[in-house]
Amino acid sequence: MKYITRNIYKLHINHDIQNVRSKFTRAAVLKTVKEPLVLEDFKIADKLREGQLRIAVKYCAVNMSDALICSGLSEIKPLLPYVPGFEIVGEVIESKATNADDEEEDISVGDRVLVLNKETMGGFAEECIVDEKDIFGIPSELSYETAVSIGDSYATALIGLARRANLKKDNTILVTAAAGGLGLAAVDIAANMCKAKVIGACRLEKNTSIVRDKGAFISFEIKSPESLCKRVLKETDGKGVDVVFDAVGGEIFPSALDCVGHEGKVIVAGFASLQLPQLNINELLRRPSFSLIGVSLNNYRTHSVRIYRQSVKDVLTMCKMGVITPNISETLKLDQVNEALEHFSTDKSSGKILLKIAD
Image (cartoon, rainbow, N blue to C red):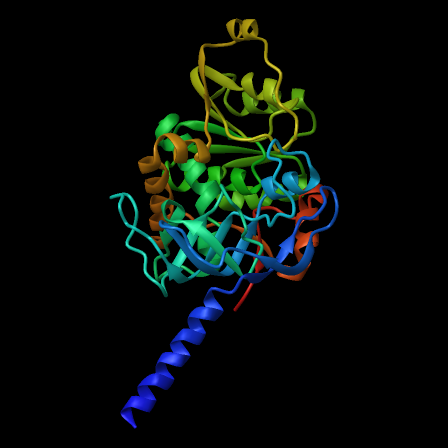
């Protein structure tokens, strides 16, 4: 009887492993650029390579970069068919992690994890294969929804403001696109961790209250590029700000440069306007002396994986401690993925938009 029971148990285990290693997963698939994503069974690798893990996805954040790729406006041109989504939370269901790097965590099957899967994406699906250097354990105090809303934007803001700009208590900072996912993260980090005085500039008046609630001492609508500088100089008695955190680009960028004070710093973190800013080098000489700094979390992953990983761990810890709190605008189901992507062109949301993949 014990022998039979033991073998039945082994059959159950083997059946579970086969299910885990299924060659297909339900996913939202981009088949043609500029066309809606299609919900279907999508083939993924049935065996992991060394250093990979398989995740049962619970939630995936929908980001501007996802919308740009799907609309063909991104520099990233993936091979089709393709499953977008890089900011993922879920449970580890299979692992071939080596834990060879001291910076990587000892993650095991069954652990709750956050993943930033920017190399291979695949988050708009029930299962996803990820690299071990992009996986982070979620503190037990944090929900899946909170963890998936904090990794990319908050780690980017933390590197830009604390490490590169050295933002300090009582410094003044202007955050453009302050109601977006990255902008709100920058406001939160600047106001509640760095204790700086935050000026939040928004594209729409309706979003200014959200920015003030996040910690900005003043927030206003950008009615024109010229009005941005006038308002900031008025609020700073003509001195300008110590730091500008710009995630807009386009025609706003030159006006944002006019807002920075002598020996200030300008962080370039994104281009929500979808327009690259134009800047003649000789224009730098007519402004007060300042530093122009580009920040990309993905570049830190390439050039300094230690800082990349530590920054993500730090924002998870700060969130656990209640120092910072991400803003979740809306949570939709996987079959509502095209509605979620449309939010970026219709200004329906501020903060993070999430797809709920599974309970």
